[in-house]
Length: 120
Image (cartoon, rainbow, N blue to C red):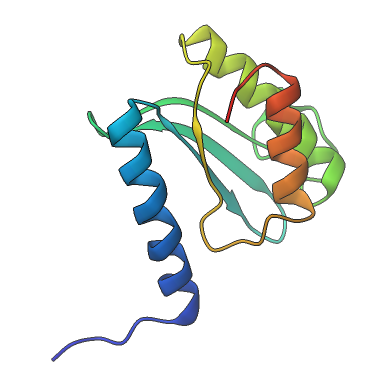
């Protein structure tokens, strides 16, 4: 018996398959974003090896944010993930927004990562 996918799962898989295929062809790691009501998380993932190269979130103490669920916190995480990715030797990534619309906190994180030196 097959289990039906939710609309969110379909959006996630549709976007991730495009991004993962691009990452494998071009050799670029994937910048993945997960957004909850209270926090935002970002990871740079190498899909060929299945390894996380760098990670940052508002839930950790290094983020230095009071509230994790706003645009300012997302931009702080974007700068932090760019800094950590550069330490890991990554400058070019593909952006995996998952099922989220490129708007608000997701857009703020992406723009801050670009300002921090990541290319995508």
